[in-house]
Image 1 (spheres, rainbow, N blue to C red):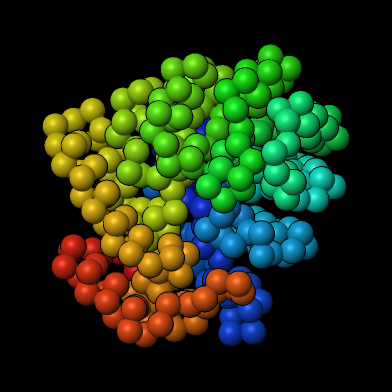
Image 2 (tube, helix red, strand yellow):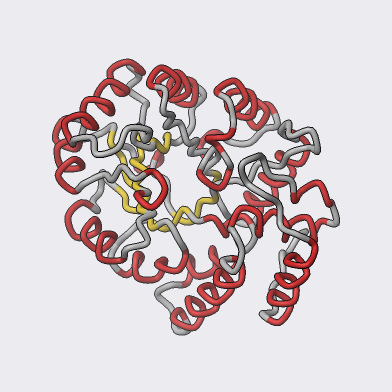
Length: 305
């Protein structure tokens, strides 16, 4: 894989702004994505924190077109394309690849539980073959706390032997540092990149040779996370890591998607930003005020907003 194609650094699973009627808001979506790019963050659109699995295939395709037509560089995009529906995964992966996106972040098929590595290998193999594009770069998405379908070390090894160029990396959202460490020791290479799923693990990941992080709070605290990525070899890195971990802890006092959307609504002075799609529930005014006090006490800011 060409070095120019490789994703590195900080990526944000971009929050999807909704109107009061629960339809996606393309104007605010573009505005948010441009702010993230200006902050040095690449865009993992249609991730968990994007409420992607509450979006239809046509909505994801449309929002991707919205970004491309707005001039967002496809090289900055890592769309989440993993769906329960196999044909939808293939279709969305094919579209993103044809558009020139840097890669696709692919959940395992997650409705059926206790599936075998053989079944998961067959699933990823069929995606590769049916997309049928030499430009395809798949980043595996390991998030067992939510998907309940893990991506094992053995499965990764088998996929890399079969598709050493296409299988380009992994996002580890297990929340288990031992697992991330095992991925780094066994697979991080010139052809396969390991991203941690939270900035809480960013410094350890970088010291272990990893590529960076794909993290929810890249939506609200991008500049500080990027600063650690850029300066992790310098004195003071441990202090920066501690500060990032503390700020993330503020957001984790509430359900993460709703808390981040509440924060953006507060900072942008746009109440509609707090809207989430069912079954998620927006943060109450009382809880939003409590979060704001925590963030103010932490010295939190969103430069450029």
